[in-house]
Amino acid sequence: NEPPTTSILLYPGYGYYITSFPYQFSWMPSNDTLSGLAGYRFLIADNPDMMNPEIDTTMMDTTYMLASIGNGEWYWQVRSYDSAGNVSFSEIAVFYVDTIPPEPVVLIFPEDSSISSDPYGVWFCWHPTEKLVKKVGNKQILYELYLADSTDTTIFGEISDTSYYYEATLHEGWYTWWVKAYDDAGNCSSSDIWTFAIDVTPPVIESTTIWHDTSFMGPFEIRTHVFDENGLRAVRLFYAFGESPRIFDSLDMVLDTANFYHAFIPQVQDSTTVNYFIYAIDNAYDPNEAYDPEDSIYHFRVILVNVGESDIIPHRFDLRVAPNPAHNSAKLIFSIPKSENVEIAVFDVGGRAIFKKTESFTPGIKTYELKGNLKEGVYFIKVRAQGKVLIRKLIMLN
Image 1 (cartoon, rainbow, N blue to C red):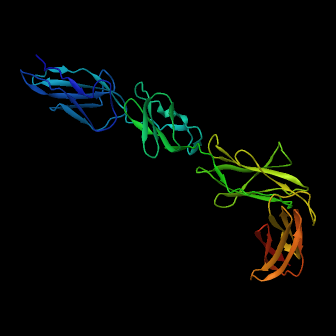
Image 2: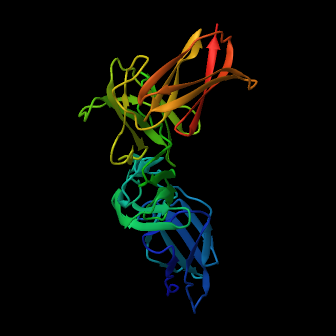
């Protein structure tokens, strides 16, 4: 009448989660010194009373390989039998089957492909979906945040909230980040991988057109070269007329090619001072700004004169041809800082001199009208003064 010794359950332990199959159950062997051990009865049921077991089988071994069973809460027991029919009962242990990983979390911020100009700490935010509420047990979801640059990956683990503040200063460059969600059973899912950039460098503005005092009335083309490694949100030309203006109008500059932009300051109707500067911002969330010039503005005077002298003495020798292209005749508009003999010559594309003249001019903005039999074609205007030679191309049309 003496039953075998009671088997001690080994794996899975009480409250253990099984996340994959097959899974091997094991227990300590029983002993029976009288009639001898006849075998074991292995049971798995969905209730602690072990009624209507899902698995009910006998064996001599102390292991059982479970091929599969549904997700949920389960109970298992081993009963030991001797040859006389006596039986001993092990304890009943609960275990959970959970092979379903959490649904991937949805990333919120920093947004994918976003650019920030603030390197001093970053908030990472995400939110779970409703399917993250597990059906088995009182489950808790923990998160791991992955942050990678071009060389290293940093992992921030065991986060119970759906946000994390990274306090360190980030260097300039592009980063990738993603979040993994873990349940108590160890099932894992991973979010999409997003990228963001830290950009604290403002755009570079260079090669801006610099106008000098002129009698040309406009419109005045302004060209500039603007570059930013992460792209530009806007390039604008600000301009105003008059001395010491307080209010500037602005125009979006148009991209040509290879980071060159242009816009036109409108034509003026009278002598005035034209003021202008370039403003550019990049694509960062709080954009980096650049100005050209950095701490002042460009300005030049428009001096309207007839043929002859003007009262304003220019600062440098300059030459313009207007209109260009021209019909029948064209005007040479040049500035003379001091009294000078000015040599004027016109050459065709073959290098033959079509017209030559030397004339004395007093200081000022001067105009000289080219008249004559200039046929349709391309000509080159050469004006020599102040020990310098200026050459301009003229296109004549019928």
